[in-house]
Length: 409
Image (cartoon, rainbow, N blue to C red; front, side):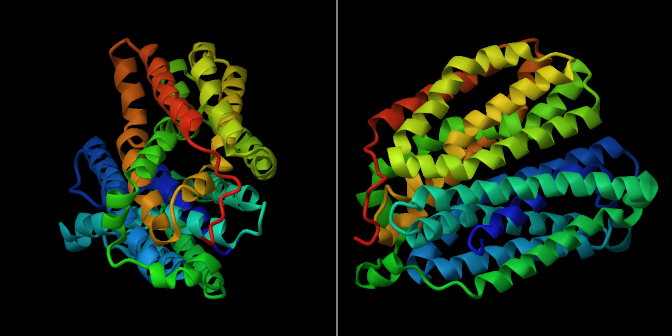
């Protein structure tokens, strides 16, 4: 829990920014055009994706040089610091252009943190798991991350119901970021109790000065496999979990409250299955579940999109089916990717290609589906997802099974 709780905070903050941006955007830009202020705020949100690959390189290399525990601490400091800065940031009326600059700095810190957190925590969980339990341990990365997303959504609804739009727009939007800071401090306290992993301590004599260069020079094939592992999954994640509820509201007229609760039900169903899928992978291997994820989407993504309509039940069926299939990836992918690399480059080997693919394909998925929809080609997007999942399926099939890899060596 100490290692994976960072995901809760990261995805809490990531979703809180999107949810509350409609309320705080006017405080960071000149008065006048609300739409322009909202657009500028979302552009700053997108900057977080640009800094994820840099965070993967910097914090991933730091984890391989200085230890997993130290990297987990630094990533949490960056995320908590970003949340605190947003919570107390002065407005444009108070400090002028410094306000959006500080908002951008906060998002840069959070982007750096998110880029390194995934790899550091996945590596830590894989290296501390008892023999035959790495899949189970790995599942907690997405369990806590999804719970963080749900907490941001539900807290937003609660605060809005209690304060109303006027007070929410005046000062209520600061509450979730202050809350995120508190979560970060709790995570830091928990991480103080962590001990360094056995494989890292045993491999001190093999440590390298430049892990990023070492990975690129000696393990390029494993890096390419991480890209293949991720390219289909990240597009699925940002489509089905992040964008789909809003998409059916604007395209099919589904009520916002109904879309929200469908999202909560679907995500809860996925979270409930993740530990069991991790246990299954410890018995039968990583490849069958990864293949089920990619093969399932290859066959079902086009029919699933064709089922979407103004009916809430259609959204429930599509989103729940999609997220349960995604769970076959989410439960075990972190440890499956960590198992591809030796100890001295394990964190950066996972972090750099993973965060780059998430930024390029995951971050652009909502824009791709929206752009195609506006041009009357919405039916093209599921074929795009299917093509990326086919790439992932080919990588899964050709990658050796790693369930029994000894990470101590």
